[in-house]
Image (cartoon, rainbow, N blue to C red; front, side, top):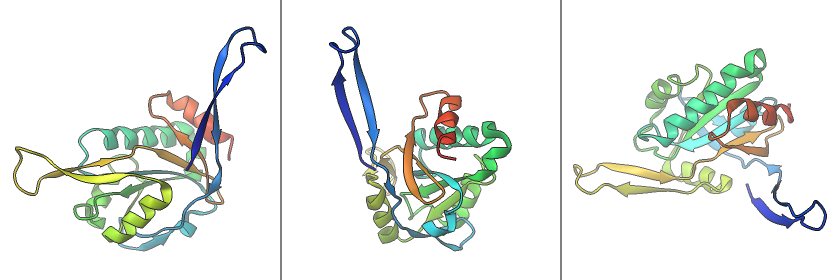
Amino acid sequence: MRIIAIFAFLGAIIGGTASWLLIIDHRTAPHFALVDHTGSRRTDWDYHGKMTILYFGYSFCPDVCPTELGYMSRIIREFGPSGNMITPIFVTVDPKRDTPAKLADYVHLFCERMVGLTGTPEEIDQAAKEFGVFYQQVDVLGQQPGFYLMNHSSIIYVLDQQGVIVDQLDSHVPVSQSIDRIKRFM
């Protein structure tokens, strides 16, 4: 999703105050065809009709992914009964390690309804490119051969019931603010 940040100098208009305006370029969510944590084939169309919050990461991530998935889980939980109208999705950028069985164990640590998606390296690469997600394998010096981490973007996408990316969430803000932002599109 493209985000265009425009610095609007409003000094003459509102007494010397400057402000950042964030304009979100709404667009239809990219199509994807992946495998969920139960081994079933899923496409973006399976999630139309409900709000979706979607994050790309990997289960072996030592810090950022657990933080972001925990944040998504808190959103669902604190939404109350309306949280059932939101599908939380975690898409791996490490299909080598993140099998459906691994994802089944991992996503349910955060939210019983969270969907874990994986696929072939080519399918993951295509989905990541369509969403504008960067990721890269990084071998860690001083570790055993084959040990690696994944550098990756950290964006929580909000998709409306028609699959349109309508917002991005920031886990550095209170959950209540993210809930208010999601409610605007429900």
